[in-house]
Amino acid sequence: MPGLLLTGSRMLTGTEIKMDKNLILKYNRPGPRYTSYPPANHFAGDFTTDDYKECITLSNAMSPENISIYIHVPYCPRLCHFCGCSTTLLTNADSTGQYFEALLKEIENVTALLDKSRQVTQVHLGGGTPNSVPLKYIERIIKSLKLKLDFHPDAEIAMECSPAYLSFNDIDNLSEIGFNRISLGIQDFDIKVLRAVNRKPSKHDVRELVNIIRTRGFKGVNIDLIYGLPHQNSESFAKTINKVLEIGPDRLVTFSYAHVPWIKSAQKKLEDIGLPEPGEKLEMFAIAYEMLTGSGYVPIGMDHYAKSDDELAIALKNKMLHRNFQGYCTKESTGQVYAFGSTAISQLYNCYAQNVKDNETYIRKIHESGFATERGYIMNSEELMTGKVINEIMCNGFVDFVEIGKSFGKSAGDVKQVIGYDPVKLQPFIDDELLEVKGSKLQVSLKGMLVVRNIAMTMDPLLELKEKKFSKTI
Image (tube, rainbow, N blue to C red; front, top):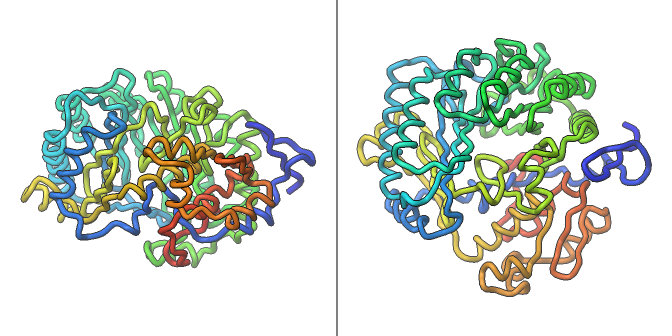
């Protein structure tokens, strides 16, 4: 496509800074998504329930003091072929009820170990398709959390919803329960694309859904899209982006479809239909970027966008953006993440703890011991330091080694030694005007944020590149 020019939060046509697609493809290689550090493939099975309990107790004296809650709802009325999440078909009402009873028991056991003076600033329900289960279960979960913990007055309570199963009455009920943000999993507006991936379209007109969500007092609405699916091309995806711009969500995500059939065998069905070539996929990415930034949306990280007055855009401007398993947030609102349900991953100051993936096993273990920990990871001081460097790069595109060193009682040189800092590895990014180095500070350029995972990979001493371990970075 013609010269795309990245200037501030807008993209214009001209010759100043072009989006060089060959340059982007140059860095399109397998790599971690860095939603955690170390990535989840490092989690070990020798991490026990006792380890998790000890980490919970220790977390009360660690920062951030805030509490973030994640609830995993592992049910879907139908399974999308592209999905990489841990989910199962919603077929048995009895087992669903048993699952939520187990969730309530796990919440009771974990919250008993938490300092009640700490405040909840985030609650996120994901899946699966949380809005596909009877909302009475969801209401019980929120009521239980509010009885056991102190909620900040401005706490964000959010839920992922498939518009295929979202009624106007559901929106009213979610508002009454206490939700104030909804994320709509649109993925694509093209019926042909949705049929190919076995996904139902929205029950109601999406623009009308969003309008009703806003009139019911929700403080935010997100829309999720995926590019790289069968039957998608740059022209069809541009139409989808146009529809999104007409709707005007507060935040938008354009996820790059991660094709990992060696992990999710259902994805092989998409190969039979045919996936877009890398060049076409890059066109979709570029067009979405151009249209969204040209309409006033601010790029957040690699694949998120927010309106300029959104708290995420403001946090990015102030270098106060943060990211955890629940997504992007501000350093002010983020908390240590306590996760509940099958396959859920808690993300505490110095450890990760993941529950068993099988729903029946999860229910059994909760009833046996009150916990369902399967694996986890306890970070040492060097990994904590590396994680902070990578999080700053991934979120804010900026690292000050002096400041990071101070937070650990170390020097900038100590930090660089820990991460295996090597100027030679950074030189290609500098040569391509993706990164600027000034003394102890690294600043990623706007177009450098398009390959920020690759930049982060140069500061990861644990990284072992294996093509079958990670999806491509673009």
